[in-house]
Image 1 (tube, rainbow, N blue to C red):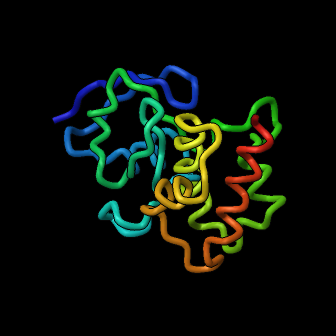
Image 2: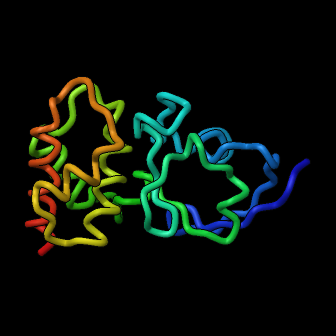
Length: 155
């Protein structure tokens, strides 16, 4: 069965038909062309597909698209404003929090959710917020430094 969902994706209203069993990751990548959302584990364990749903970090690979009806969904594509990177995106770039880049959109969205709830997180809070996101390249030190730098830049 299909249904019509209405949601706000990166600040813009959308209305699309989706299958009842369509996953949010498939809807975002295939219908909405939000290709920053990466498919990693297919089980909610790696964090590569992390998006914000009503401001809360959630894995898109285990979320049904239909459950987002009437909600706000944000991907990394929605963070830049007027062609300018957000403070968090800029910090990841400047602090070398990116290597291969596969995990980066999910890391940034998990960190964005944290910074919206806690503008001045300590290292333990950052580690906790990023605990569901795996990176095989950086060793996490530069990622944590990037989140700390973004928090400082925003305060």
